Image (tube, rainbow, N blue to C red; front, side, top):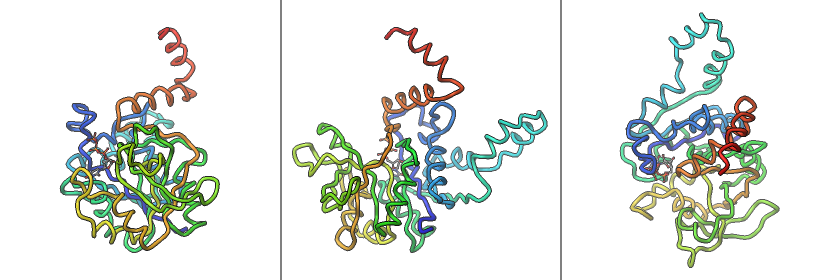
Length: 288
Ligand code: UTP
């Protein structure tokens, strides 16, 4: 197993969800009954990763507490024989999973956040998961990417086609087809306007990267929006190594936006065996 570490950058300000995110990290917003960050951690765990590195900002507590032991709660559930709920709570952090919290002192950008995890990752390949991109796939999207990483021994970046008018929201890659789902990247640019975008392949919030990218991020000056961009670090990496874009098999919900967050809640509630049937009936009765 090559990829053992995952970095979760969770230090952004979450301004699009104010006031909900005034005192709560947006990664703790729930989709149905689970916080966004837990979906991402479960995806990393399913890909064989056991060391989870959270790069946090001023809202450290809630995420740290979520992945900690909750003695009083577990004790109360045990005493009241609520075995199902107890199992649910304990499953949040399996015994073989390790959580490390690293502080990003200032929100200087995604590249900078990733760099904050460097001393924990060391000289090993690692995954980056942005929890506000909720990815649903079978097998889970990161597991698909780790398999590609193991086959190619090169960095793998998740992409999907985006509408021309949305290229400004994404890192955009261009390159040569290298199989059914892979593109051998020749260029990557952060948030280009539609007129200058080199393609419509937009980067989603999942990466498997070689450690050389840390040096490349460290060498960057501030990019788009005055931030240290991960995209610019990957552009630097391209000068030394192959990097592949991977068209994942699955569905992405952009839960950093209100629309995507609401869509994820509705679709996952409909898919829930417990809630789905009644929720569907209720939605139909709305006659919208
Ligand atoms: P976003 O671009 O979504 O920014 O960051 P944001 O601040 O979280 O949210 P808005 O736009 O103000 O609503 C993408 C990811 O990068 C992390 C965020 O936590 C999110 O997971 N990030 C961004 C950091 O960890 N540090 C940063 O300096 C910037």
